[in-house]
Image (cartoon, rainbow, N blue to C red):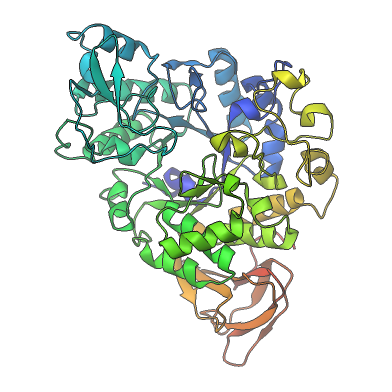
Length: 551
């Protein structure tokens, strides 16, 4: 596999929900024509890989993760012609598209399930997991405690119980059934033919887990290996990005042997520890998180790192004490918490709207080993709406301007798929694309520069990371070495300034600042003293200057 087939190692992935991005026709729902209309915005931002949340035909009871037809576009968002036009226009701008693949379960409105429930002899009956009498105390729980309490639901038509780890309207598929696995290959092939560059595999851990009364899969990871083999046979550079929120010592298995499984894993372990580090204003939790991860530096695999996503910020794998510390700092109001494990908040309000702290957090994210992932709205520091139910608090429409409906839609406010944030410091009159586009000191302008610099630093995607001793509990520093390139980054997580001494790995190489504005002085032994203010950061290149100067 050549460098061109590992393009994901040096990307910034931008996650977008079509229905909340931009409404082109005034019906209150974002659509593919709206996405096409704003591709110029994404291109200027520096985005070269878009991850689309589910856009398939759906009852839309769980943000599209309840799929009723894998081969149709949700009619609210457009049609298949719109999707094809979108992929062509994106490709013309150098933007790859990966799409959510939701095949752990379907909607209960999917024709497969409807056929299965009506006829016990239907070939679709075995597409799902059924029992006449579930265990009194199931050994697994649903993922939504307080909203869904049992993994078995009774179907009146089938006169039997079906298994579901998510909501009862999302029955789990039986991945032991070879016909189901063939259906998955058909779905993959269909969307690859339409021009996608890969898939974000939803609930990968649950796909290969033992389900209900069924025996475990003989080789659980064979499901994911089959998918990878098929995808690569159809398109050599297509990737699979997995949602695999598993124990740290299990994660390396998802990458497979020599890259025959997942290309990227969403890094839930590091996300939780990074959040804890930001809450504490200390580097130790982040270092601890890095130490818990399997070393994939010598493999084709890559971590996909993020600060926030479209779900809750899950800190369930932290210790009770660490989780309590995160909740106290970032979720002091009970309404900010969800499922006992997470926060339904955006990053900017979590950090008090402090521009320096927000920049620090994103600089740190982009300086961690892996591929950075940001969510639509991150680039302008949007807030959440806690008046909305559940995880919808962080799924509000993008603020384009201070026009009515935040410039998202020309429709009636009551028609919006979700209300825009209108009140408080994160209301659309204060936080929007248009205002920040006109301000060279805005977060949006800063994010454009950060994304551009990261693109020009392949060492961070390809290199070997070394965590550096800083002598300061508040400062995290690391060094990347790749071929003849060395990049050093330092981040002060605290509100008090400090000076740290860093080992550059090259006592004679010249030093060029890539990111940040802090001063640095070379010592006689080749190390460097770096002055960091409150919530300050810097990236330094050692050797020849290659990246464009943006700071």
